[in-house]
Image (cartoon, rainbow, N blue to C red; front, side, top):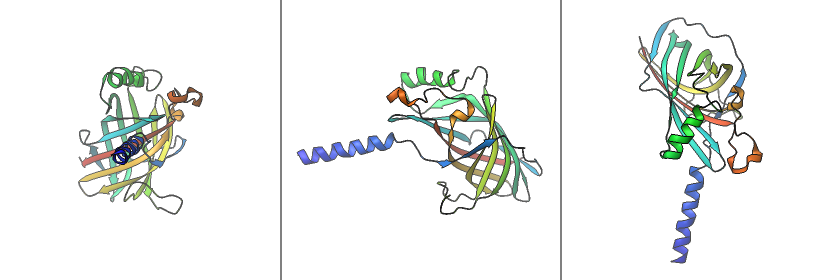
Amino acid sequence: MKIKSFCIALVAVVVFASCNQAPKGDQATITDAQQTASTEGQTFVVDTAASEVQFTGNGVGKNHPGTFSLSTGTVSVANQQITGGEFTIDINSLTLKEQGEMFQNKLRPHLLSGDFFNVEKFGTAKFVITKVEPYKANGQDTSLVEGANFSVSGNLTLKDVTKNITFPARIELDENALKAEANFDIDRRQWQMNYGNDKTLGDKFISETVNIELDLEAKKQ
């Protein structure tokens, strides 16, 4: 009985630890803002009900996953190639997956405050495509997204700061519909979100790394 109890406790510890490990994504390359791509060709309109931006912030032994909704979005396609696109993220749509008063009545308002997104001043974020090219994996650069076939670059404007990010994605495109998926990590400090990023805070430390998962669906207008 003691051995059985020990095994159950060990399994519980392993499961708990794995649940609190930060999710891993492709490391996005972050540079200064770049010139946006042209918008030639057919317009595909994002299905905002079927599309989502998921995020996970993490600290010491804890993860806080949530989502944002897209308010608008379009992708331009010519000769079965993406030539441009623009997406607007509704910051006020922030939803935390964790339930309870601490998360819904304390953490969520804190994330929307000036310490993080400052939603009263910056109610939206924007991503504008600057380049889409074939993704080629090698021994040092292999995407965690199964079937990644394109490398996407775009200007992400958040809190009035614009940086260009590049990440692998799997994009499925036909004459009438587009689906895209990506999973990558960014450094929130690049957009002047520095709150809690001090290791002297001990168990109150908040990592600078934020995991982003994109699920996008669009249809030809």
